[in-house]
Length: 147
Image 1 (cartoon, rainbow, N blue to C red):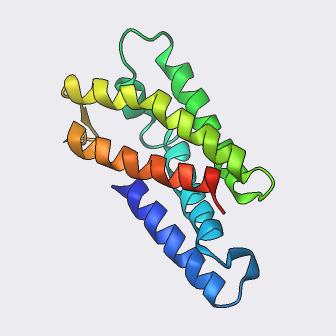
Image 2: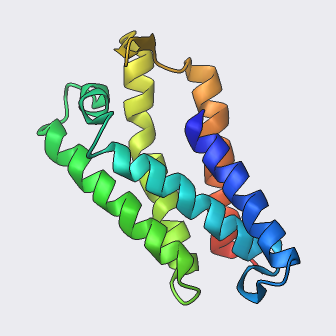
């Protein structure tokens, strides 16, 4: 739920800053870029601290080197977050992050099917996780195809 909160709160706060006169954030598209970047900073840093062990456990067992996969995806999320904040690269970063989310979704499916508990709690049920994924993908696509 924290990524959704980061996306929504970051977008709303950036939009309010735009309305208050920050010209770089004047409009929903730049505000959404900030919200999405904030979300990916949150999720990307989790690949290295705090939840790393849980994320490694989520990698489907048939995939090799889960630690490396978690590291690579974390780096891609953080690089993508930076790319979202640079107007010249924002569309490409958003498209790349959308593809990355699609590529990582099977880990969520696998974790739910295996009944994993992460940080002492069951993983997000697959139905709810799917809805969240659609929201995150929609945000990335909105930035990628933007105005």
